[in-house]
Amino acid sequence: MKDIITDKFSCCKAYSGYIYDTEKLRNSASGGAATILSEVMIAEGGMVFGVKYSKDFKTAEYELASTSEELKKFRGSKYIFPEKKVLYKNEVKSVYHVVGDLLKERKRILFIGLGCDVGALLKYLEQQGIQIETLTTVDLICHGPTLPEAQKYFIEEIEERYKSKTISFSVKYKKKSWVPPYLRAEFENGKCYIKAFYDSDLGFAMDHYSRSSCANCQFKGNNHKADITIGDYWGIDERQSGYNALGVSVLLTKSAKGINYIEKCNQMGFHVESADVFHVLSNNRMFFESRKADLNHASFKKCLFQYGLHKTVLRERGIITTLLLKPKRLISTLMPTSLRNKLKKLIKYGE
Image (cartoon, rainbow, N blue to C red; front, top):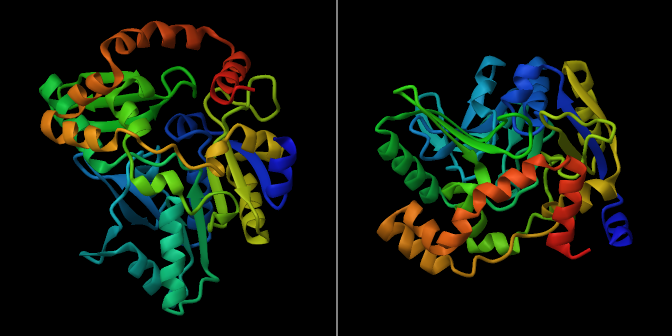
């Protein structure tokens, strides 16, 4: 395995990093790489396209930020496919078209999105003959997001349960530390819903309900089209240099443009250091692997639209497995990070 990864991805330069500012780090996904990369662009007078939740948290959508304050809405992961539209000058337009128009004006742009969104953007710009010298792209180590309807049903069901509207929502809330990620929803009536993300109904949907094309993703490994690929640094533990209990990001790049951009992060309050490519990718295999096909996709979808998300998850997961979630989670959280990582690898890959 080491030879395969090292030979195939030897062109990649890997880094790890985290934001020094504790408040920013707590509110960011993993180590906050997307936040810092965005702040670099804003500091240089550029603009950032990122993804935020809609006002009701039932969908995700692109938006343009031109100030550091506006970047706050991009913080945190959104595990659903975003709409490819953006509000620009009081008009809803294709996000790709708006990026293209700004590049024609020689504006400096940072675009952060899924690998497929970055690929679609670059293809559009090539077809239109638009120069990309002032564009920097960032994509994600992607598991394959769940479909937006799962998010919609989840929000509606927890709002019904708590008899109140959602006012904040996170799928990677850092309850005590970075791992495990928690889902947290806060409501107008002051109540909160907090649960380990992968034990939640939305977490189950994330693992079992996505586009069929995600099982054969065309933007993996050396086919990542972005200048920089970022994600959680799964596999790093408290014994290693660069570890932070509140989260660590991994950043990968194949280009001088990407390396130069990452190196600027040091000047923006971001601890960054070189990382071993083999260690990074052996623990972050979604960089080069697609998710497994959702074998029960059709039945999940039918049940979802007929009965809602909670009943669908109970049916698919099973009552016994659901009852065992809490004790399994308790055992996992009591383990040292290094032991937990080792057991995950043994179970998942049989090594």
